[in-house]
Picture 1 (tube, rainbow, N blue to C red):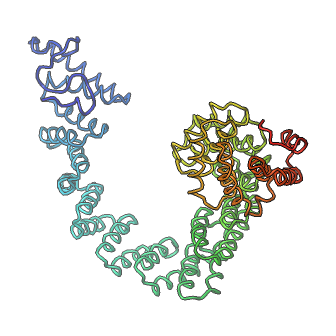
Picture 2 (spheres, one colour; picture 1 turned 180 degrees about the vertical axis):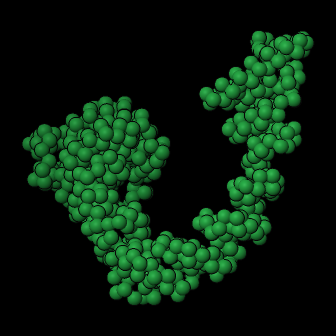
Picture 3 (cartoon, rainbow, N blue to C red; picture 1 turned 30 degrees about the horizontal axis):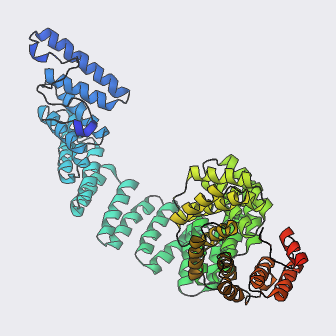
Length: 579
């Protein structure tokens, strides 16, 4: 029987029989050993070696050594016990139970063997049987309260609630009223929907120690969890007579007021709770955070959410998370300047939170504050060198500032870090394509665009940029036309994409088709101000023999800011020049 190969990967498993091997081991010649003294010496050596391995945390070696011991001596229950414990450590419940049963059967008087058996039974979800073992131990050792407690807990896990309650009652007769017993009993009673009986258990704690507010809170929670609002309200009111700033009670009463539509009382209780600096800021943040989701459905929640965040800041003026919470609220409401102020304040108090830096970079990118984005991303890439988004945003910033080699370096670093989001990886490849193009590295540029389109084949912007740059070089024009046309299928109203398609058609010599598409683009008022579109229209018109109108649009392009040498020559020489 091969036991350990699949469990712990040992080369030779526990078989209690022959195990062929070419290696010399401590048990290689067990069958040949007849001298009891030598057997005893070898078994003792294995036992102490196994104990040392166990103490060093090398459980697999200890299992092997104890297993080798059993080849020499199977009459020692301690070894079976040790193997049971070791198999628990390596998370092998079935083997742990087998060895525990053997040890417990060999010596029924040893409580440690019985405890190991109970643990192994529990590990195998055999809670009834484990409870039986603890019942036996509690009768053997009546002075031990732990055995009765464990018996009750196991009966509870086995779903035998009434039997568990009876054991807890028996234990309470021995110990008196103890908080842990009361808690376990009320938990089981609530499981049976016996709310008043559960409450009566907690009242025993209150009667025993009427000054302990925590017990009143536990009682109120029982009523609250079972929609007994009247009883819960009475207890919360009692708590406030003892502790007027008790935040949990104030929050609970505020929620009750909100449920009955009393906004005045709601804010009165809530404001008092949030003003308490002893009320955990984490609990306050957890209370306020749902407003971020509610704001997307109800814009009126913004005012309420901001009121709460200001209360948090007032009570915790040196906590970074207070300002980050308000910043999240502003960001969700698209109030980016206010969000920036709060995120910067949060970072000034605690600069170790990457999530805050991420929000800061995201807002700078949205506001086109490129220099600030670069400054922030430089800090992020130094402090959080394993974060993809730091290098991604640095790549965006350096590209926008036309620092193309730096952009390529940052974006490639982002690729090595990787991101599970295809959208971001596609953005990196797209921006790499733009950066390589700007440096005239067309092979790398095309490769980057191809990778972007593998990830996002319907990315209209990548399709447009890639196809336009191919047409600029006069390469793969048929492929460029297909990609450009697909971008228009995705975004049919884009004047920019219409201009690109028109230009590709022009490069293919399809001048009439090009004229049709660029005139569609020029129906957009913004396109009428775009010098590139105006110059393209002039080029198309000239090749359709409309020289006068071509000159008019070349001149308009110049007036709108176009300043290329080619355009100047076109106007001066009154002819199309393909540079």
